[in-house]
Length: 252
Image (tube, rainbow, N blue to C red; front, side, top):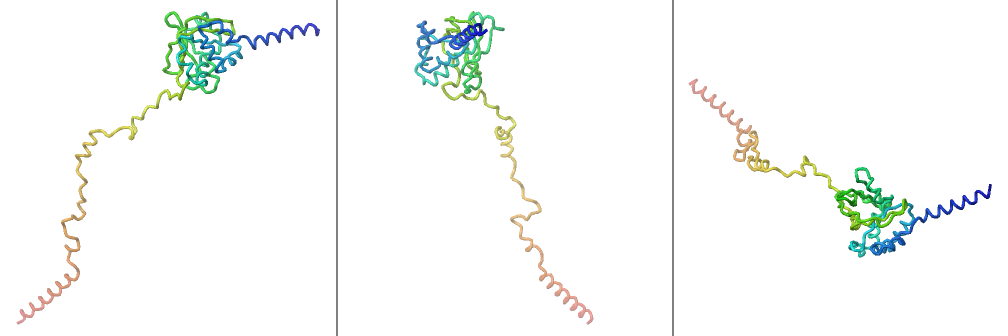
């Protein structure tokens, strides 16, 4: 019984070891001189060892003639960019052709970094002009990295596809601006300028008139217009004397 278990355990350990190190991306790419610069960047940034720890990936490799300014960027920026070229699934030309509607959204290694935003960790791929084009899934990003050839494939562990140019994912070498700003409120009094008609009405409208009941500036004070109590008393006394004198004259 024990003798039969030992060979099974050995086979399981060998299978596990071979699955854990299913491929070495650096050694594979070293066989293709056209991708030597791309291979150097994978090693320089430490991304090659992370790729080798995966069981299944698709690598979108850029040839030397199209590598552009990637070699002059800081290592941390280059690593972010290259992780968007590592798809966490197996795709070869045959599988791409079998895609439903000839389009798909692919998950990249950058999605697992925890730093992706606005779909930075995803790629779009679609059939176009008898080939396939890749691009960032970020809104407004270009879909213009063409599939040129299948470099190599080892089903279903690793597939290396040659593309025409690096995939540009907005915000990986700087701050990603918001996709769209919120629209201004049309009815907000702060956002709408005063209309010309309202300005004209304010200019033509007369100044507020003075209250009719309020005293005007030219009229004398109320105390000056009314007769004071002392003046009224003097008039009464004078009128009384006049009556007395008149009655005395009449008696004579």
